[in-house]
Length: 178
Image (cartoon, rainbow, N blue to C red):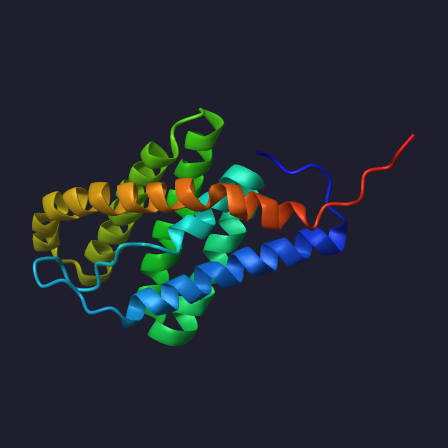
């Protein structure tokens, strides 16, 4: 379900809600303990639900904007290293999710490919920052975790997509009659 026409204020309001949702989900996820069998800092990426919805509803540039706002939140709460990882992972995965949407991939496939891309970009940044090639040994585990996490985020969006669209469409301009 795509949007019809939005007032400028409606579009700003919706983008603000989506960015705030991504920030809140990122914050809440940061409160969860890391799983002991995963590399330090590995998270499920629930905030990607907001980015993926934005990619399906508004397109790539808007999804990049939500990912950027989320990364700025990470900068203000977790520092420059986490920001670099969030920014690179978020922008690359938002782009991949938008391409998936354009190719009409399922939400689950989109979530998985977005998670795979996000983890790959973050690992590349971690390796560049630390100059530690040994981090590459985490990659198979990160790929497996990305498939699980991407499936979950894809399913979450599949379940919440209709109510999110209804909420978003409350902000549309009234249709002119006659």
